[in-house]
Image (tube, rainbow over all chains, first blue to last red; front, side, top):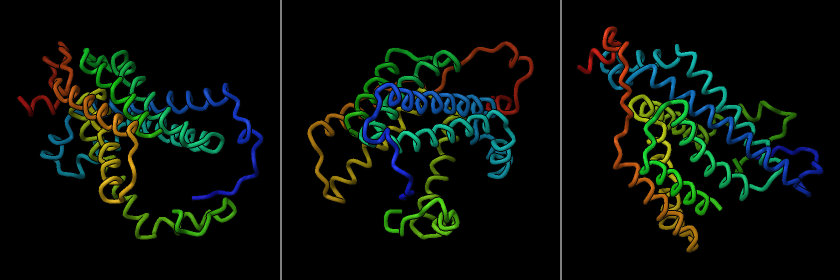
Length: 139
Length: 117
């Protein structure tokens, strides 16, 4: 998809602070969105059980009547638009690996603090390994 | 999308029309399927379990591009594949869900918990 826009002065000389701020915006909004969505799904309960009891539409209703879920989707959408904004100014080979890999680590931290998840040594190792792996793969 | 004529902000109707192109419609349907499965996984597993596990999709994409599209994979990318696979194998060994002992739910079990008992 190409959306012609007037050339921005930034595209030629990316300011490192602005680049950091844009990637930080993606990481923060996406982590907030993931944590809110995860909290919403935990509050709803096991969807397989709900579907067994009240059918697929009952499961869909359980999700779309949860305000926390929409808060999560709102932040995920915000993160998508900050990604588009960043791609408008910075190169894909910087934004994609940086945001994808940093999100894994911030989510492990946020999951431990806000969702009280049991992030043991194995999960820290997994988050860090996958973080480096995604960076290498997307670079 | 790159196969379509370029879309400008002056004609947003072209974006709506693009949604009904077979390839894009198929992509959107698959994305909906992804999100539904992702939410279902989050309903019974921790975020710190689901996120690294879904990152394995990157490995599948890389392997498909290698063996189907015959793209070259550099040694750095192969090491990325190895690291993700290692990380996913680590997370797969842990219990998917953290159990929170909540005294309140013992008195007032939710419908879900009552069912699983």
